[in-house]
Length: 93
Image (tube, rainbow, N blue to C red; front, side, top):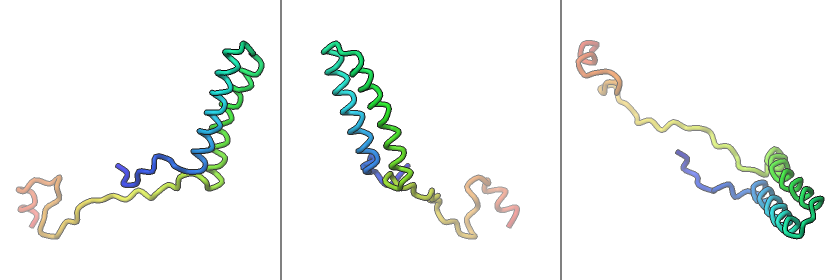
């Protein structure tokens, strides 16, 4: 799969997670305190988290996409292709 394991440690990812965390914590407090208007405001803050993270990623603060490289073993002229049976390779030689 990917040789680079950073788990998304970027400013965009951290900012989105922190905003969502603050929104969840505030929402929990307002839910227990029976305050519906601030609770729904906290839900709005949670919805801002992916928006802010996405904008920051578009600004270049997210993870950089690495080019997809196919790591196929090198094949010499003497070796037949892996999908071709040995008998056919000898017939074409």
